[in-house]
Image (cartoon, rainbow, N blue to C red):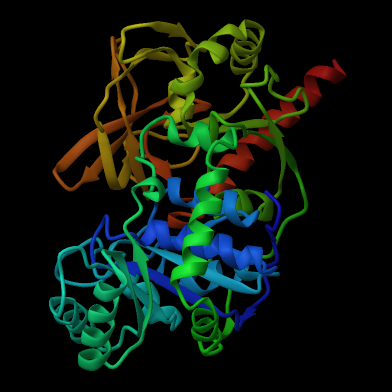
Amino acid sequence: MEGMTTTGKALRDSCPRLLIAGTQSGAGKTTFTVGLMAELRRRGLAVQGFKVGPDYIDPTFHRAVTGRPARNLDTWMVPEEALSESFSRGCAGADVAVIEGVMGLYDGKDPRDDRGSAAQVARLLQVPVILVVDVHSMARSAAAVVLGFQRLDPRVPIAGVVANRVGSPGHAEIIRTAVEGACGIPVLGALPRRLDLAAPERHLGLIPALERGELSGWFDGLAQMVRESVNVDRVVELARSAPALGASDPVLFARPSRPPRVNLAVAWDAAFHFYYAENLELLEHRGARLLFFSPLAGEKVPEEADGLYIGGGFPEEFARELSSHRQVLEDLRRRHAGGLPIYAECGGLMYLSRGIETAEGRRYPMAGLVPAWVRMQRTLAALGYREVVAERDTVFLKAGEKARGHEFHYSHLVEIEEPYPWAYRVSARRGWGRDGYAEDRLLAAYTHLHFGSHPDMVDRWLDLCARHRAERAGFRER
């Protein structure tokens, strides 16, 4: 949570910056991004990581490597005008910003334009792009690939290339000669094929392993590979060549900040730590004092809390431990019965359900506030952008109001008790569905909402928390 600010003033940014993009998913951009961040930090630079799109896992890598909270840059979930604001807020105190792209450079929400893509972010923030190309089994064709990326949209500032999975020094020289001759931009480095340094699979155990420090050797190995295979000095020069962006007027934080008026408990530990930085900052900006606590460590919701926010994560990896803290779960049920406003998303929904059933069939009881069980599966159950429409009044949205977010989970609800008060109708690529559970003061859903997509819902929720605070004060006075 360090590094966050709540100022509503216009921000100015001239932070040196780079965007690492790939020709496609799996080209090696995460490997190079993490290795570059680790090497830059080894050189004593304060590195700020960003991720294009809604993903939480790569920003967790960035945070572990840089020691600074990473941020998402997303032009579909929040207004395009907020991009510079989010970038500037993140860059405070940084020497260099490294932005990791999403999928291929031009891949975004729609195949007809660049909305939501790394290319759009590069264009709007005037960020020099380093294109990572998997050149395995390629020679001069690598130049054709790079040339195509240059010509699709000349406004996107592709400034250099890193060749990945190079077979030998001779192969690297062939790629360099072809690309620099045909495309007029430098090949900044050639990463060898290193199966031992490939990015870990994005499976469910990845983040817990990261939290336990088990990937520190991978970070060190990537830094060494980048140091030995890439002209890092020239990469830094490219970052410093980025033009100043000038003043950035607040968009998400345009309203004056409010002094703290409620205490909001936020679950934060290895089981629950997927939060968009702007979500927490908007809550602070509009009058919440955040109280971080760890359900995994057996900590109860702080007694002074006027509301509760349980974000996403991987509670299934810690289902036994979470279920064993019976006093914590009982206290949560007590606070809910007492009117505590609660918002939970994805992993938080799982924690509030009747329990989690693992892929092996083991069952671990949870809080039981949502009348359904959660069943894990070994394949993705949902992934992608979501627009939600409230089916009824909730702690955030009034019936019919819309917000945007993202889904990513390996589980689904089973044994749902009817009638079940669904919170949202959800628009996805394959049509409409339903998500979430909504009571008077409880909202839990798989969709991770970005509060910047509908900032009024922050005030709606905090007003409810303030009402609960007044109710508790009145009860104590009797």
